[in-house]
Length: 485
Ligand code: UD1
Ligand code: CA
Image (tube, rainbow, N blue to C red):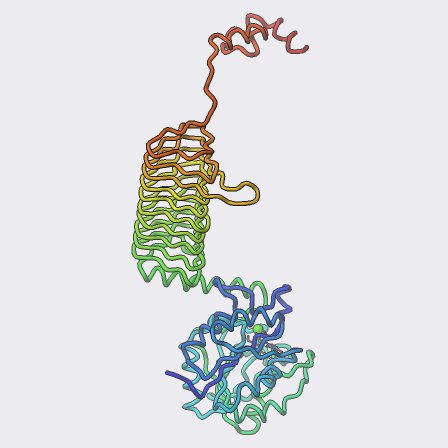
């Protein structure tokens, strides 16, 4: 349902003093997004005439978040309250019939709830319709003073409550629908008569009610939807609810999540059926996981794209990388940006990859760094192999072909190419290209001196360096005196 007679205004200019933060409140994240972004996303499906964000503190950064979503900013500088914010936006709101107002710090609001609010406003021919909520702990919120069962007389801010009014547990969510024609004259009568010397939008309600205009309040079905974030504790509570919503979404899509309360999943993450997520996993950014994968405990995936049937062993990090399918990675692997593991490729424990293509069925089982490299298929990289991609100034490429065998503890000094089917002897320092099917051997030849060790021990007097501890007891004096020298 488009709402072409509606303009939406998101109040996002405040500093958020109670957070004690250098970051403006609406930029704080909860559920993996800045608060204000979640509010905008709840509004988008309403298809209003326009969405405006009132910005002030860190206006540029807030604009950067909302502008890509099609929201125009209006600068409120300085900030003299929520009513003042509306006055600043008057020209931008224009002559549309209705204006829906939301605070930028209540991000759990759902589109359906906003639709219902607009419907109530229209069908009730109201001057203002407030989204309220009945809560067990109303502390800090403005309270709804009812005129009758359906109508409202006023909103009283927490700081201005009488002792009796403190008992009221119906609160103002700060989400409203106003008829524009009635809002402006009412706001014009509001005075900054409070300790902050601010113009409160909430005070416009009493003005409207006293003029005999209809003010309605619709109680939210789920009071958690209107939670505002004034403190770090509020942020944590809201984050918890977002995280739970997301886990429920994936579970409904066929994903098993063990100890779900320990798993953090970003809002844009998807995962296929029969994928299992173990405790203490984080799935972040635009991570996409296929079906039948297992993400084992302690692993962190950020912007990772995984095909089907992949096992991510414990404590593995995968950032901005692609795994085609049937792969096993970890435990304790670090797959850095630009890595691509083709079908069935394996990366084992204590392996780091960066900007590396690992061909089909290739294996890097342990203790290796592969960076700025391309590996063909069915190649095996021995433990301790290092691609030396950096000379302190520039980065260089290593190219390794198909069915190559790199012996353990080799260094491949880039730029360098190892041809298909080549062997690299263990412990080599490879500085020149190795042609296909050749052996690359880059280490000094071993010399073996027969009897050398025994002779050395005799020279040193034996016991301390002896390989036979039993003999020690037979020469205690000699050993000790030598030892003290
Ligand atoms: C406000 C309501 C209160 C309600 C509560 C719900 C007022 C006076 N009070 O209180 O009745 O129960 O929300 O969460 O409205 N802002 C601006 N410009 C300003 C001042 C504020 O854009 O000059 C923005 C803030 O950035 C914030 C929103 O308005 O996103 C609400 O302001 P906040 O200070 O959080 O109001 P509350 O004290 O929570
Ligand atoms: Ca607030």
